[in-house]
Length: 42
Image (cartoon, rainbow, N blue to C red; front, side, top):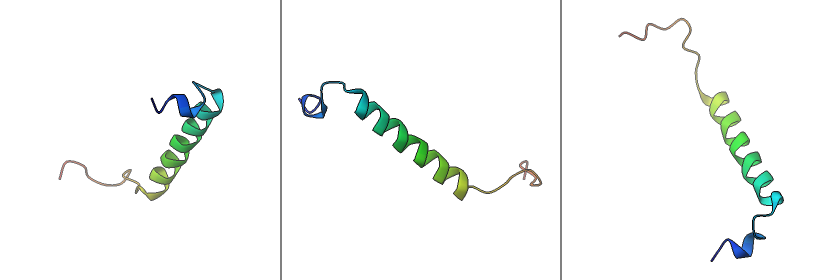
């Protein structure tokens, strides 16, 4: 039922969703640390 209130599959909401997921990805990448010089076998 809640899909009807979101514009019946409007591309606007798809854009909002993709923008939010992209923002979450960028924040996660920014907050993660580099592992290039770490020994991952420890």
